[in-house]
Length: 509
Image (cartoon, rainbow, N blue to C red):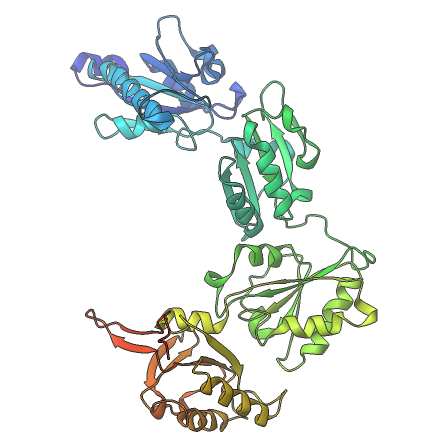
């Protein structure tokens, strides 16, 4: 229906949110030009100086007989004495602006609200949309975003294959920016200007600064691109973005990049899949040239083009550590993949033992924490580790059973909650029974025992039994046991949920 027909029928006008693209009028869509040409009213936002970037982009399509509605912000980045503060001042402005546009729509006029980029992508138009779209016939005309424009001007892929693109406002807290930059494959940080110093620090803290690029006023007059690390903070305007391009086919160290350029990062993947990874661990896994680890744990890490994966059996920890350090000595960035937390009965100690040898003392080694099995199972059960507890491995492969039994007695005598790792396997079937009988010499038969199996995985099972009823045949290498103290409570709530918890306060003698 054309505008004249709408006015003839006496109906309300139609609202358009018109995306203008990143700045070059040549990048406006045909539909955007058409809608502006047909509209009765052209509205656009501006600061108090009255100059509107949106209007300047569409200027050649604005007719002399257009009704223009400048929507002038009362504040931008400065302070305000409005009783509702900055947010209150803007909310009041948006309500007043929407009311002005509603007058035109009620009179049967078609209103085109101009928006840089895309109207619903950090766009000012969306505030009109939320206030008017439920009352009037509305159409949003998408536009090329600054994200796409920046990638095009850099001439480099933004994301490929299964990579993840993260869009971040520079106004986020610096620590939040750091975590998100560390965890993602590719990223664009918008809204720079005064936020640039904090954004740059976040790139540096996340280890991504060498990859980061800078784009200012993409497709506009005064466009500038370069390395983010080389950008003068005092020269950065609001209309600038920081870009982390695709890592696929990005320059990586050669197989023999030379000493001093490689490192080994030992990472914990948690008890199961991606939900248990920390942002720092995600970033380290993505940045690695080589992944080294027990094949079962490597299978939890997504395959990335350009990375080399080196899987091995679970019983060659020292050989695996030496292999990783040799790769790093050739200049490779190596992630040694461990389940749970790498420092809890896992790969961190094996790597550090080998790294302490004279041949490897010049190789950088870092350890990144992960969610360990005890914490994962405890969280599923409630809070059995709410007070003092001891962590022991029942495996006698690396220490005699006599040592394990002595430590069990000591912990039981001290009335500590126990988290028992590696309780049993196909070749070790008797340790759980021995441990149960030893603990029963010091604990009530009714002591709760949490059996957490494959926590976080598809075969997860978390249940609680009495210590006297602990059946060794129900325990395998994928199970962790949490044995309560004399104070640990085991209750069923009104909703049927069974919880186990240990009070924070211990009774006085």
